[in-house]
Length: 134
Image 1 (cartoon, rainbow, N blue to C red):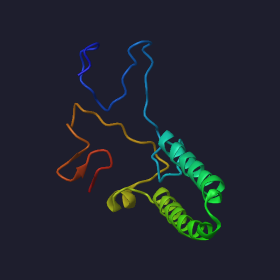
Image 2 (image 1 turned 90 degrees about the vertical axis):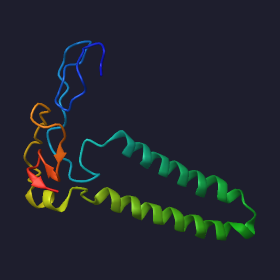
Image 3 (image 1 turned 120 degrees about the vertical axis):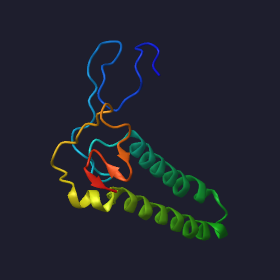
């Protein structure tokens, strides 16, 4: 509970306490991990992946003894390639339930959830935003 405003947390847009501007959620549904706007965690994970692969293949492996370099390149390259493929697959998948995917029109704006009508978005395996059984 927020003691400054005396209200409980909710999913509906609320005014920011210091300057009273409304904070609205994104209006278009995200289809997958490539939908804009990107979350900052996505940017951080790609930056970490590029940084680690650059450091590994550009600094650490060249410092190994010559006999170990080829083994290290093959093993580390396989691990990095596997991670890259899994990361790309995970970014391209639509995480929505199959019933939601069948009923969802991604060009329509996202509905807002009203806590005065329902306590949770999904109750008894029914999504009150999408109006489908999940």
